[in-house]
Image (cartoon, rainbow, N blue to C red; front, side, top):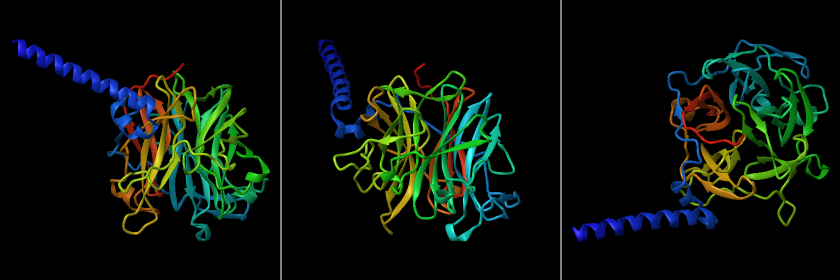
Length: 382
């Protein structure tokens, strides 16, 4: 009996030691983040389950027509592909703004943004014409003829919607900002990085840090007096006073500095590229960022296999990475995710909390749109 008690005591001490050592890994060793994600998982939103009964939930349509003000022609504006959606909750419904491409071959389709709405977050009804598109305005030189791509939407404290999107002229991607009161009529505010020296800088994918309200709104929030945005293709960060003009964190050479870099390793899912996904969420544990990772194709080289990852940053210092999932939480598996305009892609970009569940919207193979759902609860800050 005495020996049994000693064994129990020893085992208990072992468990306690492991727990304490794990805690130190998270707090003190930046290079051990891969381990920390396995120890501390309550910060992430897991698991997500793909809604196979409905996916893909949005497809290209070859019959909807739009009069292009630049080409002065009728175009089948969403005939080629629809993908990379953002989403928000408004008046108890889910509203999705998605990227749609026409059939202009010179740029593989000019991109415009469509609007769809849903009661249940799965079945959507869309408008017949785009709500955002290249026009004969000051942004034409940046948006034509590649178009307006990859939107991400948040709401400010006054109820105005702020959208980051990518303007593509066929050569250079530039991160831009627009705003709206109703999601239908938009005002373009120009380049996100307005310093003239950054005009021709390749930039895209702006995920603004938000708080989740009780009625499901994603409201942009300040940290240390500034709004914060994760952006770019190597986990970059920027700050703003007004959500419209941004300044990126620079390294000693004046170049954008990474706070979520791609990882080394042949079998790491984000060893080629790291790109922010949906709006980042301020939680009790820290800032949760859902992002897209891509890997190097082992056989052909180049970038392949876009998957979803999750990372946690310090809620008081958004440059400090605390934890990161080792494995992708979503990856290409279904036929519509494996084959399309770009094969092997699940590109996460829209996230809403609706009717007690998380709805994650993502582009599949740069061709269609799908959804995954999670009932996991996280504690967000009021």
